[in-house]
Amino acid sequence: MSLEMVRIDDRFIHGQVVVGWCPDIEPDRLILCDDEIASCDWESEIYQDAATEYETSVCTIDGTARLLGDDKTKKERIFLIVSSPAVLVRLMERGVKIERVTVGGMHYHEGKRKIANYVFIDDTDLEHFRYLVRNNVTLEARDVPTCKPVDLTQKLKLR
Image (cartoon, rainbow, N blue to C red; front, side, top):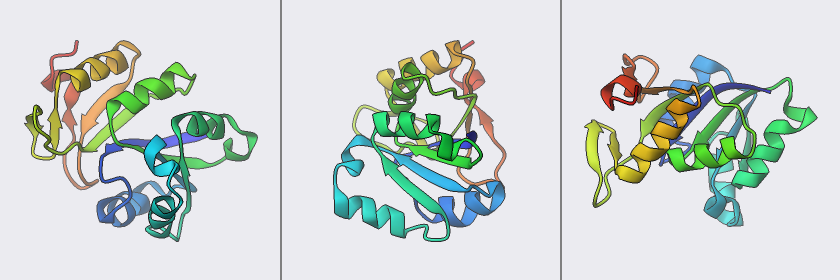
């Protein structure tokens, strides 16, 4: 398995992902990792139908960890999409190796502060980013491939 891209985006699979990122990274499979969506058949189907030209899996965190360790995905180029850094921490705790994360959309909710036009975080998110950096994960913010990446490790003073 080759994690071609790991993206935090609370909108999951949408235009920027399908039209912007997928042609750029040419994945064999998209994995949307979210416990709530994976437990709802109709919501899972909506996301699977959003990118019909790609094999799309909607999985729980445990299911994602299993799928990434499965022989059938060993030769696939994987595009993993999650809603928050907390999900990535839980995946890493289950043995998933992550080297680079692109933050593409963590939108405003009460209690969150802006760190980029499309990234809002709270103290819990910051702690999860710290965990990722301590585990040698490179963090960047970038909404589309044509934009210049922002080094989140530097911006958030995580080193």
